[in-house]
Image (cartoon, rainbow, N blue to C red; front, top):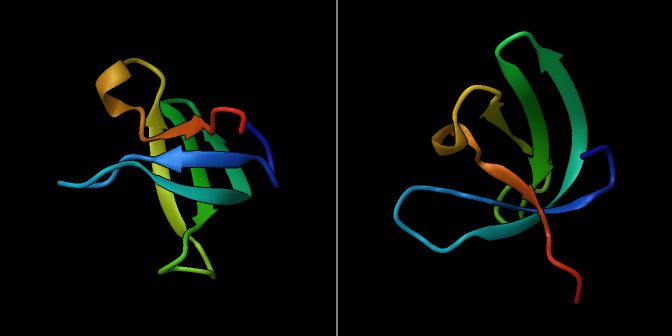
Amino acid sequence: MQVDDLVTVKTDGGPRREGRVLAVETFYEGVMYLVSLEDYPAGIWFFNETQSKDGTFVEPREGR
């Protein structure tokens, strides 16, 4: 995923939320995505672990 991609994010206790990637930072353990959400237009960071599917919080949005 890259800047401007539409994504969904997993948050605690609710349905996946839609947003847009504002920035991407790659680390050895995974990738951090700054995602703009309705409640957080300036963005909030989410981390996808490379070693665990349970640690995947940001995924590409399915086409509409």
